[in-house]
Image 1 (cartoon, rainbow, N blue to C red):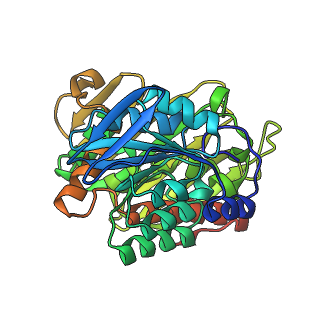
Image 2 (spheres, rainbow, N blue to C red):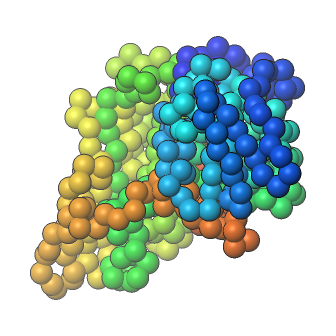
Length: 379
């Protein structure tokens, strides 16, 4: 398996042994005192006074993260690593010529990074986070934080022991409409929160996203983690912590994955609110939509990523429409990376710490368990 969204190959234990043993080749140019210089196909760059960041996993998401990092003040992309030399080299060429590694252990040992962006499949997140922390590197890890709660706890412990920052990439918080819903709920504009309903449906993985590891819950976390970590996190940001989960799930349409691809998940929150998540990978029509109801009013939206609208109806007031375009600002990926860099500079906890990633994974685990036993699961 590569650390990109590329083709599968190595099993988890084999990958871990190879990766952490540092058996891969490396292309790098050492810097000189007080600075780091790198060369790739004739391009030179010297980085001074910036947070030096390395990318681990040069697939679609990794390149997206790194592209936005290039625009963040106070940060510099100094290295990329991927088990696929071709993927790493291609990413480096696209990203301005950082040093190229085919082993993250070699990259971290070279002393060329202060922090890493981990954009590999979920099952690799724990060993890579522990590896980075052992070298004193701060960690930004893509969602899901890991594919099980025990790995999340180990990642939190590793970061705490090494005194490094650990942030989870729950970027949906920073998209226009979800961000506005979170803001309104926290500002008390909806009064007492009663209910939240979120739908995310589509036809499953296609194109570059269709990879064999995504059919394994152990490797990906299944759809409830690999995809719906976004929706679970969003629902928690609006209504608070989840105390009980009940799920009805099915595997339909000839799926070969080892987890259900159709889920209706009922949630009870500590706040007293109730919720429903509709997750499907078998819908011929894709949609992302939702509704929040409270004593102070209702918010209704659809087309989260399509630039559509948020309907706002205060209790006893007039309904109005707010376009996503009117709410749009900084690119959401840039926002999360900027906040990560700023938290390191300030020595403060990042806005999405490991505890948040763990909470999302626990909800997903409870949903899988509930569907298996046919009963609610308390958290």
